[in-house]
Length: 270
Ligand SMILES: Nc1ncnc2c1ncn2[C@@H]1O[C@H](COP(=O)(O)OP(=O)(O)O)[C@@H](O)[C@H]1O
Ligand SMILES: [Mg+2]
Image (cartoon, rainbow, N blue to C red):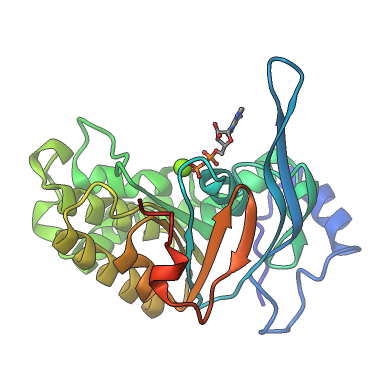
């Protein structure tokens, strides 16, 4: 397995520190890409009360997995997704990314790892207004290594072509339909070929048919590229197609494999 790190001087101390402790260079292909062990996330509220948002979450995501996490509003889904996406760290417990305990990484090392390994897709697409589809898609490459930076327009056009929107490369988001905007957002999420794709209600702002088409595309591209796909959803059709399903209830994650999808969603989609 190749190193997940870029080799800037400032990171070398961190890498040496990690090298002694972590199995980041292990060759075990069955090791999870993401491994959460008894992860909690709490925040202190204004009145000094603790709010326990995640309560002892265990979750393993392997390369090639397609996982759905369902839960009602406020149960901690986005908090969990932020931790999976290296935007936030657990209050306690451990998170390993490719064998590396991420809570010990410096924030800039974490940011680099996030940029090179993780792609995000959001409910509201989050495209930059006033920029073309291609400019939106290449945004992640502005922070990438030199090779990717200089090839950004080629790489951007390749992935726009893959989502069927090469002809719309010069179009601004407000001129595109919701489904097209989400396909641009998918292209942006995938342009650095991440190993983990995190989708937070990706079909939430789309009609059923367009949502199906968007999920078909996400599933297919994730499979093609060998990435792991984690989708947070209320949508019965989206949950049904994932190979592994979990339910999040007030910060407690439980597996719902083998359960009928309607039972998984009971009380969730209401
Ligand atoms: N930084 C924070 N400070 C206070 N409360 C928070 C914070 N982050 C999340 N919460 C609360 O924690 C709960 C879970 O939030 P979230 O993960 O966004 O839920 P979901 O995405 O499932 O709707 C919500 O009640 C939310 O208001
Ligand atoms: Mg949320």
